[in-house]
Length: 327
Ligand code: SAM
Image (cartoon, rainbow, N blue to C red; front, side, top):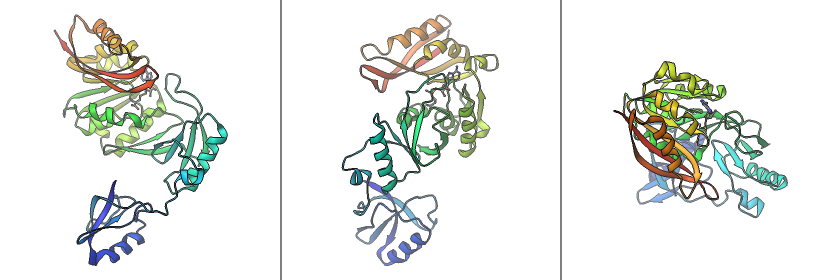
């Protein structure tokens, strides 16, 4: 596996290693690799490496002394990472406690360990957590060159959707009007603005909108993002016929908002419509709901039918990219 390394000529190796060590930049998990004339010195972060040093991705041996949670536990625990928060999904509190202790004792980067206490619930799609180690549930997540500050205790966020979000963001053209109807902390809205779109983002969760504004600032796009706290339906008077692109990421109940999407759509608009349906026929319900709301005013063309992930046994999370062209 490649890791970020500073590449130096052999003769400069020790001086460079010492310099990086003094700055606290040496990787704790990988050792120096040698390749012909060159040494590759693994670094923990690339942000603060002095600009006269070249940073490249290169294979480097994993340090054998690194202690992983499995070395302490005697089994491989399952966990997800969001920034420096480690997320467990354990039913047995004693097992969860043992894993949390092992994570904190190990060499992996972790400020907090949490266990899922409930399903995602309510309008705001937030779950309850038990904090097993550390004391903060706020963290910074990085995705495709953007960073997002968020608190998992007060807002929805799933790192598992990163690839899907990127698929959508890559379709965005500079200067288009993009409307993120269920925006959360901005993982669609902010990258769309970074692509050059003018973005309106709504969310009923005020905490999410506060983070979205902060994330727009962090990523340098506050001038192109209008964040509005409240029910998206209330945005219709201000943004009717405005949106060239609409993101509808509220998979369990997006069909209740297709009328709103159509009211917000411009003369030629694309809707990214997320749904959760039975695997036997996951696309028809969404397509039918959109046709019912948009026809005959618009011609409706389904451009993409795409499975995002398995959601539950026999249930899939899917997306439809649907173009609405006013007749
Ligand atoms: N798009 C974000 C993401 O990918 O992380 C968040 C998606 S989350 C599944 C759905 C979001 O919709 C939640 O943040 C919730 O607060 C918001 N929401 C639910 N009902 C809403 C409504 N009527 N108007 C605006 N936002 C709403």
